[in-house]
Amino acid sequence: MKNFRIITVEPDHRAGLFERLNEIFINIGLITLSALLFALSFPNVISVWGFYPLAFVALVPLFVVVHRASWVAIFPYGFFAGFISYVFLNYWLVAFHPLTIFIVPGIYAFYFLLLLPVLKAADSLMPAYGYLLQLALWLGYEYLRTLGFLGYSYGIMGYSQSLFLPLARLSALTGVWGVSLLVVFPSAYLGNALKNGIRNAPSFLRRHRIDAVIFLVLLAGAVVYGLVDKSDYAGSREWRVALVQQNVDPWRGGLPAYRESLKRSVRQSEAALKEHPEIVIWSETSFVPAIDYHMRYRDDPETDALVKQLLAFMARQTVPYVIGNDDGELLRDSNGNLTRVDYNAVLLFEKGKIVQTYRKLRLVPFTENFPYRKQLPFIYDALVKADTHFWREGREYTVFNADGVKFSTPICFEDTFGYLSRQFVRHGAQVIVNLTNDSWSYSVPAAMQHMQMAVFRATENKRSVVRSTNGGMTTIIDPNGKILQLFPAFKEGYMVGTVPVYTAETTLYTRWGDWFAVTMLVIALAGLVAAALVRLLRRHRD
Image 1 (cartoon, rainbow, N blue to C red):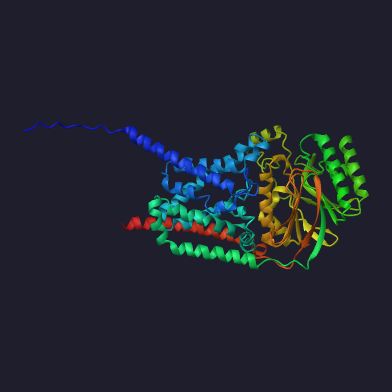
Image 2 (cartoon, one colour; image 1 turned 90 degrees about the horizontal axis):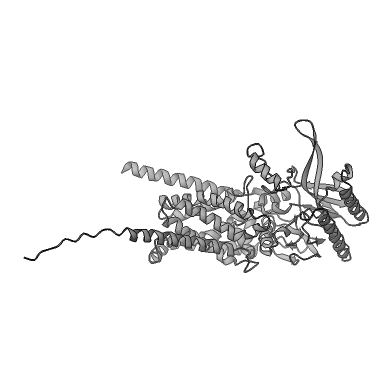
């Protein structure tokens, strides 16, 4: 009988470690790929118009990772996904301040740290149709992140379709949110199909082919609606406007920059007047010293002299002027002391006098406003030391009237929020006139990302949108979202154009606002709770 020798094989722990590392590297690669596709869907360094078709598949790798990752790993993956996505998308923030490139991506790192586990819960609770719940959850997330102090609209998926106007026009019914739903659906659908590997994808696609057909029908319906429901403004009044782009950031350089901005604005206005515009529009804070304040208090000789120079120019003008300005007033604080309060404002001049003023309603967090001085004094003090210019929020949806044309002037960041332009229209605005300072970014993609959202303000309300910027993008957009004229970015000059004053239609979005986003949020939360309860009941029965 032969002797048998028993050989004991020690487990190779290194093999398990390599497998785990390989899994981590694959997931990080997928997240990075998704972040890159996400950023490329919008204006970017490769194409200032962006590659908008990529948006339909940009989130596929991310949804795959949501399924692949363990419950322990999903949180750091979420943090990484949010951070890198907004580093790629908003890289130009570094031009404002080196720390800004960490603040905004950091905020989205926190958002995604919470979002990805919720998406995973939907996938776990509803293995077959979890992607539909994930879709509703994504729409709810997009809406919620535009609310409150930290509200921010850059990167909402629907905005990537500003060039695909037949689809963008769906926003007249649903706001940008309906467009986002159609854009994100393929990513959620394909991400679910691929979550167990490419080999299992055909089986999923066969079982869910009806879902794909329904999506294609909805997409086709939205496109047909956008093609058919174009506003015919041929008989509308034509408003001839002159938009001045002085190509100076007046906040950098102090009094010399103020003087240079005024010099260029006057020079370009005088040239534009030769083309007989009905109104001249300057950009946000194109003139920084508070005109009305200096007319009343005159507390600084140098800025007072500059204000007098501007007023002398205005006194000679025969057409109205719209000017972005720092508006100040003296108010008594809680101790009874007189304190100067500033507003980011727009002034309407007629015959050398200020006849109407708008004060910005929605301020940029941290850089224009920080309402948590008592709760977070260390942050407030740091912002003050960084020479942050704080403003106070306005309270009125001002509608200007110049020669019978009623218009409102959301300032810079404000035109990224649909509800603001909607309210202006509801208060009687016939045209939306946005005054912007994007020159600080030194980035055409940054200015283009901003302009993308302005296109949706036109399609949502079927009103023309005019943008007067100090660097880019100065443009005229018709009620159908079509860009009629566009002035080159970061170049001094002016643009005279004709704006259709169209008021024949009131859209569903203008009437009902963000109803679609709120509906998606309710469906998402209700669906998640219902799926969790069904799972608990099944476990109890078992």
